[in-house]
Length: 504
Image 1 (cartoon, one colour):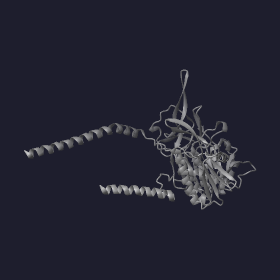
Image 2 (cartoon, helix red, strand yellow):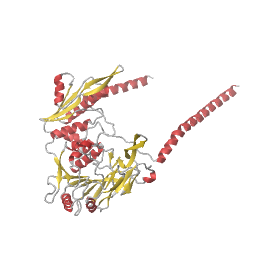
Image 3 (cartoon, helix red, strand yellow):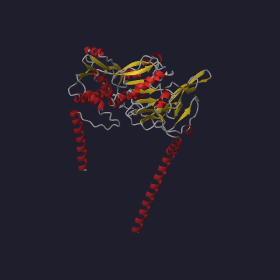
Image 4 (cartoon, one colour):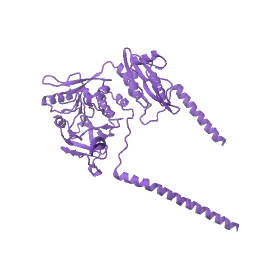
């Protein structure tokens, strides 16, 4: 017993010492799945490349609830790591704006506004004004992080802020217009993310103008009109000279108002065929899908319900390519299969796939909103919805092509009618740009934070097995336990009978 108490005491002392040492030397072990508490290579490179000092002012209130106070502690720890890696090029300090009007004014001038927190005290809820923002500055450049929320991507926000104020020459990315493509103003989420590292410009082709020489990457998003052969030739010349293309194009489109879908032709599909890429004019349907709102009239009442719509696949299967690594959930709308029919002179790499229960349906197609989809309707597994093509041989692409079979997956729409898109939709496109710019470290940083953990879809047979296991397993355990208990009691009675017999 003494050895037990001694061992317990030594373990407690060891734990306390390790915790004290970790506080003094700021050492910690990271056992999280995505290394959430280990700084990425991209962050280390950003800090090592700093040529002028960066000042980080953390405007955090004191006396916050424990769950919010932990945000302050976590942010302080990450700042200490940043300062150690920056070799004196990063200075930070914490300021409590609640202490004085001067501090509050300084926070406001830095773009940090207070938030109202609900504080529970003695069975009562009261509101407290609190600051949880950060300003990052280098010389006259300043970038604000208005609020650091619990569970937020601290490393991404802080590293991107430092990168934004310290980057002098940004690469220019072109977005092709003139063939029905949406303007940059209709891709607000993408624009916000790209402005950190890139200058985005709209490019118009004509008989006398070509793709500017300063562009290394050109994006073609959701064209609706036919490309003139002259424009196709200019795209081909751009790629043969080493230019990169990102093509997010629709081969099919659908309308929920008419419940009808048809194929789309722009001429790009024929040009891609010459490169060995076939985007079939088919609708990919998937059991793992988003929902749509359906209205049903019942008497004088209009009822709304959410119905799964397989034509809106939710993609959670990705390859190990840098463009798709770290992504969790991408949502496409009326996507099509992408196939490689070329030879081995080019390298074709799939990026994202449909689930194990999917299919492709020919166009035109009428949408049966009320259809009950079964396993027999969805026999395909892993239909390719996006890919990369690389090649250097004569007659093949010298630049790189990134192809997505949905042109609208990053489009928010006009500002007055803008709809949010899935964050990983924007991350997917941004990753493609980063990869084409040979800055793959930023991909690791952008997708490091877990955005969602979707539950795997079970087949009907698996559901049936689990249902009967849930019903039968407890009964089996009870019966099994009863048999064991009966056998144990029986042996005990036999032992008693034998002892009584020997005494007699």
